[in-house]
Length: 82
Image 1 (cartoon, helix red, strand yellow):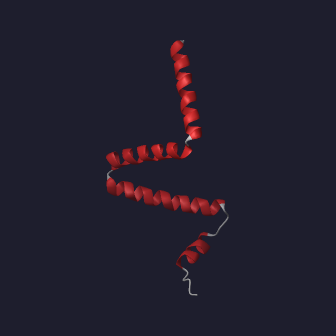
Image 2: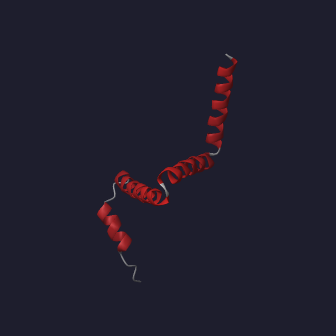
Image 3: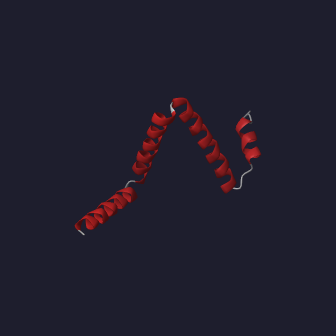
């Protein structure tokens, strides 16, 4: 019974720490996942995975914001002549 209270205390502490340090918590999780990928997949496959994740993020964000992907690509390559 005492172990159950210790587990709840630890989980409450962890939850409070994550809520008070969200950037650090995300950084730790990203670092952990990246480290696991590097050791299991290797550096080249990890880089390809990261590139595809960024492309997926970009496409998903443009859908959420109801922006056309074609417009974003054309704006990206548009020259700013002033």
